[in-house]
Length: 100
Length: 147
Ligand SMILES: Nc1ncnc2c1ncn2[C@@H]1O[C@H](COP(=O)(O)OP(=O)(O)OP(=O)(O)O)[C@@H](O)[C@H]1O
Ligand SMILES: [Mg+2]
Image 1 (tube, each protein chain N blue to C red):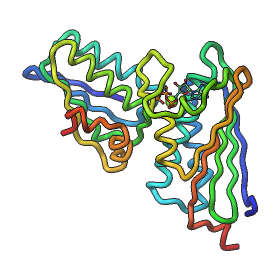
Image 2: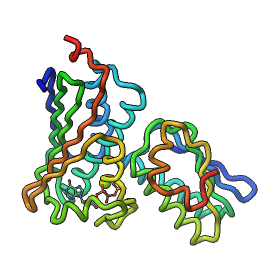
Image 3: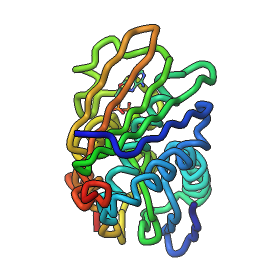
Image 4: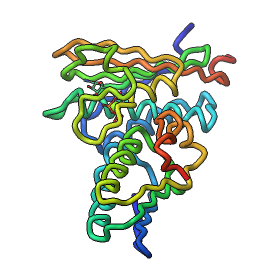
């Protein structure tokens, strides 16, 4: 699901497994709780270990973008695996400038 | 075009069943010898349609989600996902990218994903009666087709 750590103003959330509508609210809860307590300048979402994702994952990213912007931080999405590229392209997330 | 194999399954509209549903459909297609990318496309599209049935079809109470898969001798998978839920008043509008009636974190991309990942997407819906989404994908290396 998600492993998190905080260091030097950066919250890194390493997602793993499958992201769908069933699991997304739990991931959201953990990330938002950590960001509320740490108030990071940057939130990094690492997709390196995600094997499956549907549009619920896109909603999750857009929601975290809004959340972190509200507390004055920046979002970064890293390590998107080859098999998820198609849904990322379709989502238009690339135009948000968060993909690294 | 003859049907060479078929299956039906139904389950209660709990979100925990989303992963079961897409995995079951993917497993049924394995004899067609699909590529990893084809399986990923089908899993994603099925996940979208099943999630829609669960979230939008049955917003207030649990209902039953029905899946039927038919494989043809030409190597095509025809996947029907049906709910007996609230129905869609304006299908054309519902299928527009970014359109969503949801207030939680939904991107409004489910139908756009189905359309880009499958060869064909058809939607039939009656308000108060329910919705059927029919997804088609040509998986060419059909072992059934050779017989
Ligand atoms: N089975 C269904 N029953 C009733 N309404 C539906 C059904 N499927 C889709 N809809 C309607 O169509 C709209 C668009 O669906 P779509 O899957 O494209 O986006 P979404 O589900 O709102 O968001 P996302 O799929 O990105 O999480 C939904 O918001 C809903 O109003
Ligand atoms: Mg949807």
